[in-house]
Length: 255
Image (cartoon, rainbow, N blue to C red; front, side):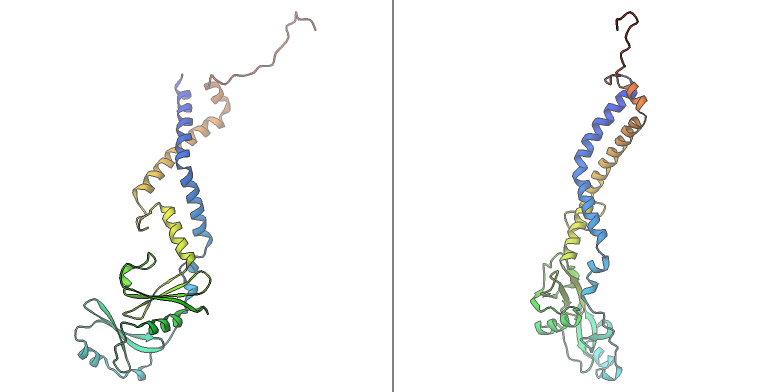
C-alpha cells in the first residue's frame, strides 16, 4: 500500500471515531450557544425586574451629622450617604460588618427585619406580583447569590419566571435579581464551557481535551476533503475502487 493511500485510510478511520466521540458535545455546544445568543443579555441579568430609582439626597432631612455618627461609631469605615426606601441613610462598615443607620435621627436600621426586607423588595421590584416567600439566608446561599452578600433576604414573587429579589440584611442594598431564565442560562453556560462544578473555570481541563480532540478530528476531515475534491487522484490511489469500462464487441463477433 502506497503512502497516500495509507494516509487516506488512516484519516478516514480517525475522523470517524474522533467525531463520534465529540459529536454529542458538538450538539450541546450548538444548543447552549443558541440559547445564550437568542436571549437578550440585559433580560437575562434581570434588569427588567427592578426599578432604577433616582432618589436625591435631601440635606435638610439629615438631622444626624457625620460628626455624631463618628462619635457613636469611632471604628466606622467606608462611610457613605445614600437612600433606603426614599429615606436618607448612612452606610458604613465596622470590622468588615455592614451597618445601616437612619440619617434623620441616627437610629440603627440593620440588620433588616422581615417586614423591612419585604418593603425594600417591593420598592425595588418592577412587577405587580404578590410576595410568595421570604427567607433569611445566613449561610449556604443558592448558586445564584455570591456568599459575600450574606446575610441577605430572599423575597420570591408570584410572577412569570419565578423572580427573586435579594436584599442585603446589613446594608439594605439590592444585591441580586434572578428568574428562571437566568437560572437556565447559568446551566447552559456550565454545559457550554464543560464546567460542571462552580462554573468559574472557563479554561478547565475537560474543555481543553475535548477541544483538542475536535481539532484533530477536523484536521483528519480536511485530509478526507482533499481526497474527495480530487476524485481522480483518490480513485487512482485506492486499488479497491474498480473502474467499470464499457464492453466493446470484437470485430469477429456476430451481430
